[in-house]
Length: 113
Image 1 (spheres, rainbow, N blue to C red):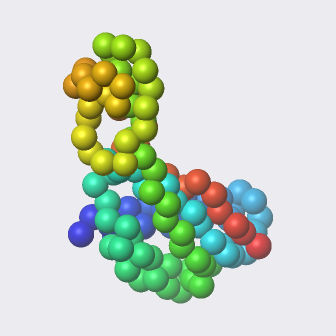
Image 2 (cartoon, one colour; image 1 turned 90 degrees about the horizontal axis):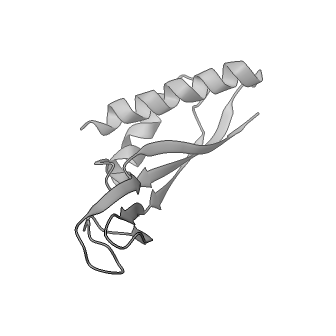
């Protein structure tokens, strides 16, 4: 389960933000989970309480939002979004697409106090 290491990295970044902002605790963290991130939303939620125990993040609310794939077609030039891992242009059905988003797990926002 690599989600525990992903949550640990999120917690490390949240602690850096706390220090930089001079805040004492995190109230909430909102993550964007890309379709191709290879992370499981439920596993992230399961790991979060373990990772934040006895830290300034304990008690924080974790919100995980799905992020679609952002595709650019090299054939017709169109940009599109996809909620599945099918790497095909929505306009011309070409497989000559570039993935321009939806691969990552990122911190979208944090609420600190």
